[in-house]
Every structure is written in structure tokens, then in C-alpha cells.
Length: 92
Image (cartoon, rainbow, N blue to C red; front, side, top):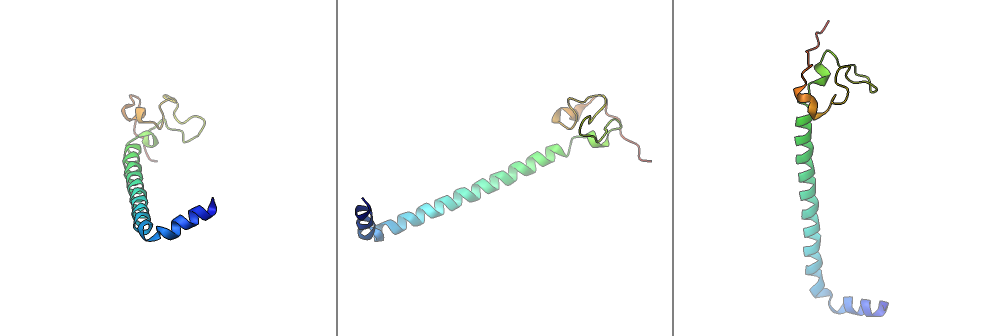
């Protein structure tokens, strides 16, 4: 089986090289588009996460066991953007 493949590659090498070049560039373009899409998704998600007001709230505990004393199920999630119990923490 191996001699058949090597003979084929030796015979058709001039015709296969452009084909392999095209495949390499297509794979490179796919990699770039994936990286660009990932970066756009990350920036979009980070903008949403920075709108969550929990860390500025009076009832935010900054403890991983109980993040919020009034609304622990929605603390630090997108549902907390319209939290009815949000009170701005006073700095002292």
C-alpha cells in the first residue's frame, strides 16, 4: 500500500502542491475568523458583566458562600441588573 501512495505523490506532486497551498490558506483563514469571533464574543460578554451592579451594593458580602444577603440566587448574574433591593454602598 505504501509504494502506491509514494508513487502517486511523486507522479502528481506538481498538481498537488497548489491544492495543498489552497488548503493551508483556507485553514489559516478559518483560524483567524475563529479568533476574531472569539474576541468579539469575549468583549461583548465582558461589557454585559461590567453592567452588573452587585459589587457596589450595600448588601454584597464579597464571600463566595453568600454573595448577597437579600438575593443570593441572582447575585452576580445578569438577573441582578434590575435588582429591587440595590442600594449603593457608602464608602467610609
